[in-house]
Image 1 (cartoon, rainbow over the protein chains, first blue to last red):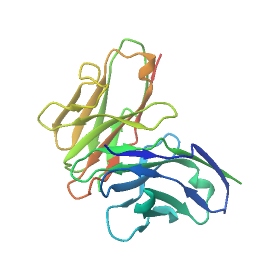
Image 2: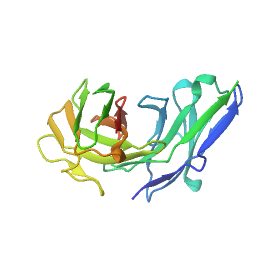
Image 3: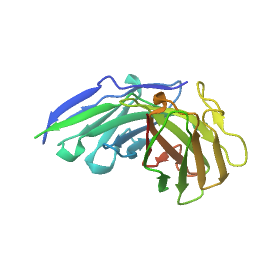
Length: 113
Length: 115
């Protein structure tokens, strides 16, 4: 079965600084990979997804993520963080051929003024 | 894509009572799911809501505690039965459309507090 690890529970960055959130997955074949964001008191919003093709994917709100098969990683990046990016970020992996999806534990992002 | 609404958005309930959460999707979807997010935790899949048949429950979740209905392709309910304070969580509904390559769309969640 697939699994996801987000090594960082909490990250604090200054507004305007760059951001990288780490995600490592375990799956025997090429997975479907997702990043979701959850603002306080809200549901989950999809930031971006990877299914196949170009390993660098662009998402909403200026986020991007890179799929690295050799490292089993799918790290989320943003060149310049805005205060409104403060939220909980979840990486998820889905398996081809079924509808099972596993979520990482989440990384809470705090943005300092 | 799909837009999902949930009712209620939040509730405070007494121990021993039951609460039914409704999930409505704005279009027909192939699959619907119910997740639980305990305070400060990630999402845990409770069950897959199957249209016209019994839900498929994940390990650790049972029908008597979390009965689920899905009468059509756009609507599902989750009931949290005989509640205890340990059931205090956010309950999220999600849906999978036929063309979205396993991409799940989520509702805003129902924040449940059990006293």
